[in-house]
Length: 241
Image 1 (cartoon, rainbow, N blue to C red):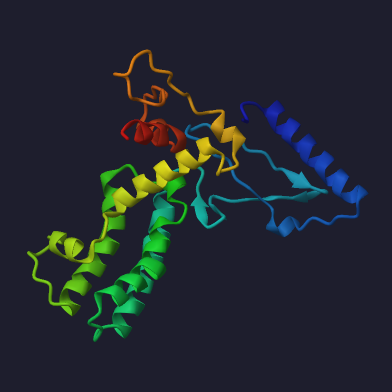
Image 2 (cartoon, rainbow, N blue to C red):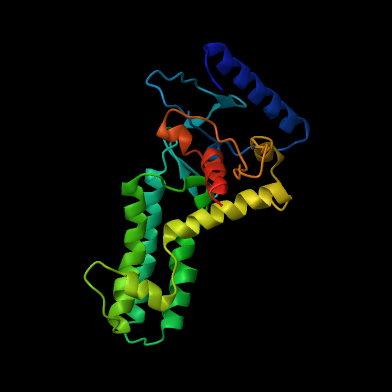
């Protein structure tokens, strides 16, 4: 955490040591691929011109890491924008080439493999908590269900997709995100997810009697942002099981 100018100098010193270590083993660094970004939630931000081997590192306002877009505010709205746009493009491709399909299984396989996989990638990290973001993601699946209702002639009231969901045995996206979150925290506890630094942050609750069924003590955060950070959100989800 950078809270003063001295912290910036300490970080720069670590970068210098890293560059010297690379040089000692004749390892080259691609400075063009190195970026610096300051994550913050305050108005006053300490910025510093970091460098590697004397070359300035480019400062950016967004960066994609393992397919997830991060911005300084750690809000995932921009990631959701890009993700839903990509899902709509793929869904449009499916719609153009399957308009004469009559097999629900075939349409469902195409949707699950090409569209829903895009909507769920990395959702343990960025799962939305605002109604607006949830609606934006649901709009993709609603578009698909409207198309399926037309192809398969499934009668349903306007903007009511429950008959189609029941016919396809399709789960709501929020339900699937919750299930994926529960599977992740279970894997973390059982050792299937090798992340000891995450595991040590879980605050287990040891019940005094059988009436207490909650497994964790989620932190008592005062802001929605902190309350819906990945680990607090996953602990609350696990307590609902």
